[in-house]
Image 1 (cartoon, rainbow, N blue to C red):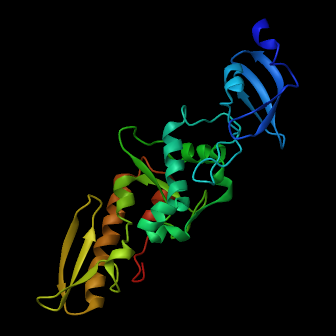
Image 2 (cartoon, rainbow, N blue to C red; image 1 turned 180 degrees about the vertical axis):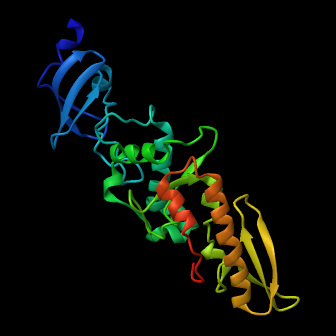
Image 3 (cartoon, rainbow, N blue to C red; image 1 turned 180 degrees about the horizontal axis):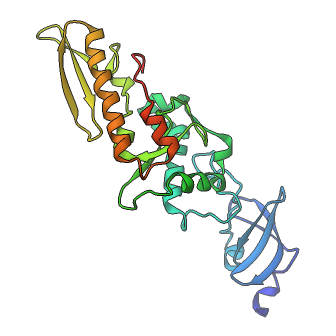
Length: 251
């Protein structure tokens, strides 16, 4: 203990590798040192991290320039599944390289309350209370037709459900969702993603409206089918949103 007290003591200040300053306010052991950052927030670190400048400010936006871990009981290691989900929505909204590839994400955002990881985890845990560990799930804002990921505008659903709501607006052109034209006949084809990654052919029609109606009927029936299949594991919010979902021609 005496070996580090010469330079590590209550009141001593250290700079991290980013030039941020913190002051020691409590020392429990060499592996548990409480520091206070400019602004008043505190975090735990170690003597070794202080000396090597490897301690991080949990309030500094470090995830795609916007998200920060914050101070509290949750961390990326112990709450890894929640962290990966949170990191994913932060990337979709704030990664310029991703926006260059998928422009539709460029006008999407994450609720300011969720910029802090500590605020996201309790919501995630509540939404995934009955989630089977063997299946991957995703945070979805499209079911509630929102441009923002937030506690009231997003849901957690199995990936098979999430795939049902892909719109591919960048690729499909001017025709309504689920409709394309067959050049050989000039007729309109209806096709629908059923959640498996493969489209289901729903026939050819002479008008756009007829083709879209075929798509709408199939899609809504499929969504209800999947909602009932997962009723016991998704949240009531998610189930109600799926059961009541209506496909629109401008989706």
